[in-house]
Image (cartoon, rainbow over all chains, first blue to last red; front, side):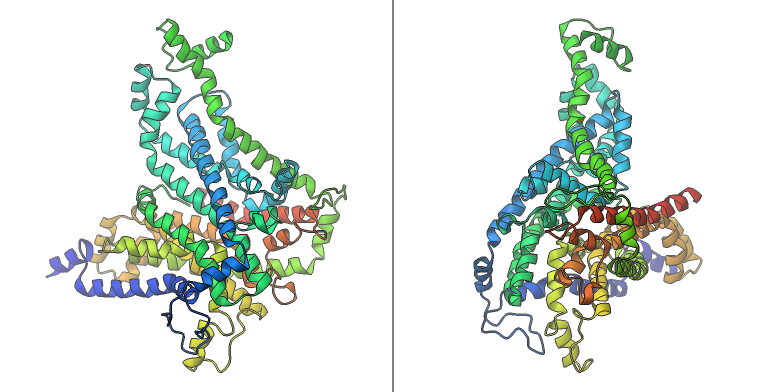
Length: 285
Length: 315
């Protein structure tokens, strides 16, 4: 008898524990995902439906996409979405290329100054981004890029943390693989393409996902750089929609869904790479 | 160039110096400048967007630079101004409250969540992904959703009243302290999944044998949690505590959206970052003062990191 209980405790889960675990999982699910569903529901409720009822109803009585049309009549929400996409694409490509090249060079090649550059990159990590944001703005302004999307994208195009993550991934490749390629006469570029890249795909997808999410979600920096509403990214545009018009909650809900749904799709499609990275211990803060 | 290439050949640890001929020379020549080409873009970004702004922040803090250009040296005026800035006092008080509430809750709750999703039950990937959703959503999206939930006529007040908990709506978004605690709950809600994943990654290293041995010795669930799980993730927990403190000091979007950019009643529901943003714009902006505030922010965020470094060294 004790043997079976122990087997339940450590190798499988007893039926009672299973029920309890699923019950708790569902409670947490309601807490974490419920608010998003409530917002989605609000965005689908028509103008005729009372959204202030004393017992809130989850399902819209007559689901309608009217609010999505109305939000685009109030603010240029699709332009905002295009702007966000531009910034995110810029940052994703920059990091995928820039951080990979630098991470590879610092991890696998010896050259004068390499260690010094690496130390400087580490040092920048203790600096929260908000601390340098004002000076960053001056740099962008001096470059003539204030109030432009390139100005929003540029500082984050090669993230120092991403270089370190790629460095760690390249570092984990066994030296023998590299040596074998060298003996075969492979040059630096060939070693990066044929030895390096196939072994760092997991980390590359992690930094790509996070570069996309980071750029798409960012609020403070575009809020500082952008002034003309036609240049706004989605986050700044939503704040503008919320502040300037104090529009009805259905329309704001539609706007938030336009900003939220793409990121959910991106994450849902790529989450297996992310969680694989987690299990390999790639994410440590 | 030939000279440099030769010098490199001498330094190269695995240099195939025994081989000769044009082919190997072309490899050798690539070797000395190839690494530099590969790191060049990163170095440009390191200098232009990391090192230079750090230096420039210190320089700017002694000026009264304006958002639209211009400005001159003003000595230590910005730092003196910080000493009697009431809004800064409110911001710092808010930061302390933020840290005191977030620290225990975000250290413990995500660990419990990680234990809940650790077992590979059917459908567990779905739950892990779902619990992570608030993390990937923009703070602006999240704050607007809560803005609606916490509205005087929103779902939370409606449910509380229809169940008879409240006779009238609670002013979550207009009362100074309720507003602050609303923002704090939102930060906690959004952070749960983030720290859960970090704990999940650390739980893999907690010894299964130790758990089994403790169970055999008759240790209950709570006992095993406190004497096996917690010590097993101790270092991760310290890291997470620092991350929580630093992010509590950096809070911006939640407060900005919930107060509609005003900082709430009397501008008292501000954070230091919100003040920095406020001084970064328009004709009344003052980038010099904003830079001085940035230096203050740096000093107070480095504190938690130093504490962690000390504790790590001791263990």
